[in-house]
Length: 326
Image 1: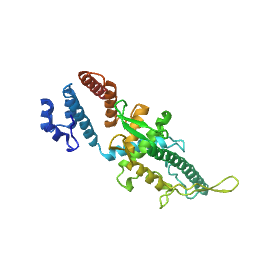
Image 2: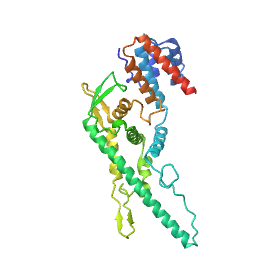
Image 3: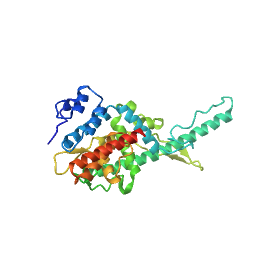
Image 4: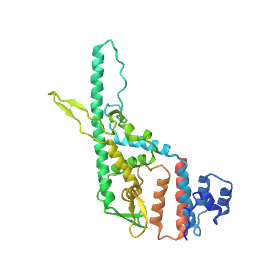
């Protein structure tokens, strides 16, 4: 039986027309919170309604996550990415960005003034070098992912955690258990997906101290001990961001079907299959934690009787509630 939910974005309207248990229907008619409706669906799950109810539960979970604003999600991801990408440059911990506090300079003291200038110059040199290394790291992730997008093959599968099987993904940044790179790439792409305007562009804001009007990293000149001038390499930040945004728009074909899947979702599902857990940016974010739990359950329980599967779903739900309380 195929249950069409996409024609109506509201689960409540779908349930009002559906054949469901009385307890859940009473909650729907009372306009109860979506979480209460979801919990009732889980509690009344059985072998006869399992196919329909699993779809309703999944839809309810999606609507729960939609209640959380994009801005809240983006702020959390920016903080996580900032911590994972940056290194300390002044010995104070944290991001290493703008960590040199404003120095109180006695204008009457040339010595103090010169000391401040030397300290500030040194800070800028260290920070500029750190930014270049960070952008080089992002560029490597970008280049590898462009190769991946051109070569990966995708098929649907009931035997994998994500529901998809992937081939030709040797260029994936998470290969050989490199979980950190996969998490970093997904954090970058997610932030770009969630941003609403250039004013909230995480990357431009991150590098604004050294950003030129045309979106490039300022070229810094330094002198070595012999007095020889050295110029930093030019880096086009605007180009990097544009190419990352293009990756977010990329759609990939699913073999043996007329369907497509976004490269972004492909990277998430590839991470789930290969690392066998959610990407860090999705952990404890509700939807993706539950998505993996559902996928694992379906893949592992396909050979079990329907009644056993339904009972197992209830056990997982009760365990989830217990963990949330603790």
